Image 1 (cartoon, rainbow, N blue to C red):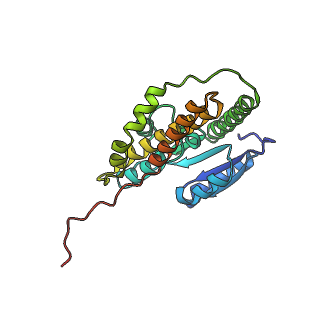
Image 2: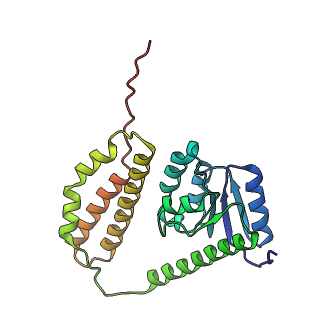
Image 3: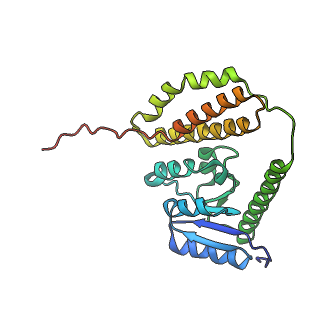
Length: 236
């Protein structure tokens, strides 16, 4: 039996099946959550930019006809959003193997036990709150420690940027390749954020300038679009 709760956490539900989407929303609302439900990741993109949801419940369809597109969409999602995402799927083992460890908060089998499902979402929301408190504490606590950054490694990354740019802008020929490219962009995007954070606390102006420049290079690479694949068919 689902226990009533006084929680007011906001949850975003992404599910292409209208009846399943409404069922999940109803269950979570009865458990005390505020719920916004949309049918696909495109509809969720703007909401995720505007609002900080405590948890995201997202259906993952790994049927062969949907698999490549579903994985590309999922793995191109911001890593921080994935960490507070609960996946629902009929193929748990395949989903866990495909997504990889520690990327999402939990994977729940469909059809699910309601109490177990609500518990997973509640734990995800609680984890999000605790992470938020930790980040706030780190932001407000002064520190006189220098962040150790290997500047030679940073210089090597900048020197290799043209090669990375050529790789990321090359035409994509398959779904798995698109997923890999998206993962690379997200990793480089995380690097950009880390370099900028290091620059902000760097005591040396020269080192800070180098870190900021490298952060800009990484940000440009992370946003590098792939070229359209040229068609080999001729018009008749």
